[in-house]
Length: 377
Image 1 (tube, helix red, strand yellow):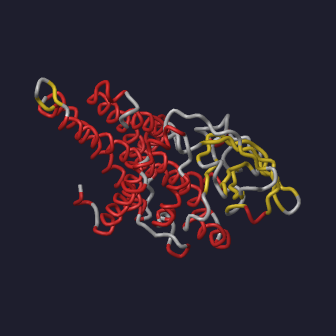
Image 2: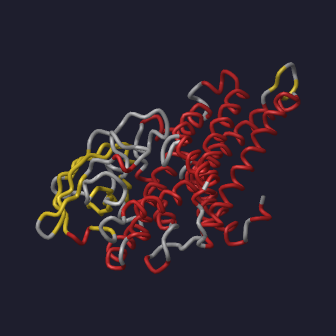
Image 3: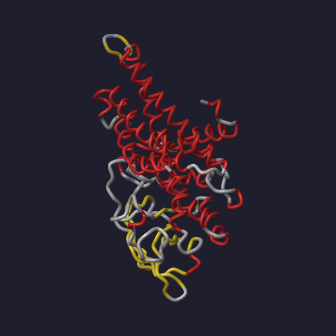
């Protein structure tokens, strides 16, 4: 695998792996059990410089290449998928400002975000508008010198802990995508309310919330121009789908590594499980699918780095990797037998964590639509 990874990317991957295994992995099971937002994880990630991996050095970020970023996200996810989910949501929020905002807005928000002093959230999904943003009902209409933002967003990662939220709303209430705009809303803004955290099946420590808005925002909080929000959101989601594919690879790798350790130690009829051909075939399939998913992820990331369009490749990587993670975690649990079904081992957590990857940032069905449209156009 390393033959396609440059020295700088490999060095970043290895450094993040050591950091994540030492600082994130030991607390992952407890954070999942308690559904507790891992504040300490973000302090250590910020100190390490990982909160700004996606941002350029001009704003205090690491300026990591897209391939290095994907490898870093995989390592974080292998240690704690919930932390990876929250970190990538932070990347979405800052990417929206980086890609859609002007220099003044970027200077205002991105240095603190890169340093971990401010945590971001990305608010696109609504109770009645998930896969198709054109269905959103949140409005941001002119009022005085600013905008009155009214509406509700749902399933927003980091929503209860974020210092700022990038929110998408219609500045033109007529149907369609052309009237969607994006805004930054700071925590504590009058009229911005955070609902109760959802009790989720997996990635439980990465809390998701309903956010309610009836806020008067200054015009300077508009990201870019009116009507540019849909294009910004789609560009951000292309990036985010590569990162979700990397999360899938991280979860699957952790499951595979657990299975490899188990089959070497567990004995049946006096023989290690590793000696049985049925087990060997399971491991071979798991490894092959994981490597294929990682290569697809890195290919999409490499295209992003060159500036080429990578929408289709991001969709393919996200589709294949998210479904691969479900298959690999299920096989790893099966290899562990009844022990895998207990909470004493991490297999059941890996299986639960992997399940959401086929839904958020565009379901598997949406990815298939994107891929098919690309092929047919």
